[in-house]
Length: 165
Ligand code: SF4
Image 1 (cartoon, helix red, strand yellow):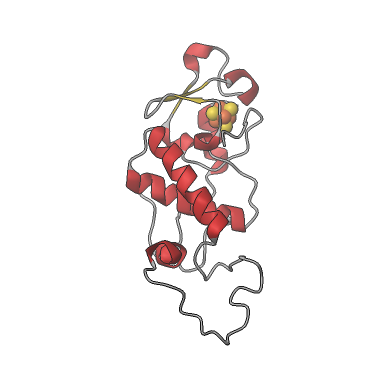
Image 2 (tube, rainbow, N blue to C red; image 1 turned 30 degrees about the vertical axis):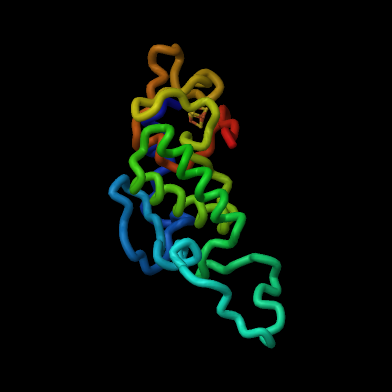
């Protein structure tokens, strides 16, 4: 399966697991990115702990947050690491943030698809290619292993994937 066939297979207009029922805005690259305001709330929040002293355990589930709440500490750390990788790989900050937020949603939904941007075999920054093209089934020779930006930003299953972080 070449990259174009893979891209067509992965883009499913309806039934996208990361697509909520009431989208707040669309990703110009084509993917839905969800509600930024609620996800980023902990990052944007200023000031100290507002819990009353007699409130008991303010976080009884040990840091887990539902979709309607902001990111917990682990999610924030992961978001930051991904954003650094995405910008290192050539995305601008806005595009990197949108994708990193999309991945927060993906992880919460236990979606096992991945981005090429998360893969150690993604070569280049801005002009990308797959260095594991044979196992990935992307090309039949190295000179044809360039990857279009749309595929690099698309959640997919790939036999050649290996997590970069
Ligand atoms: S091996 Fe990695 S970089 Fe290559 S197509 Fe698969 S996920 Fe993308």
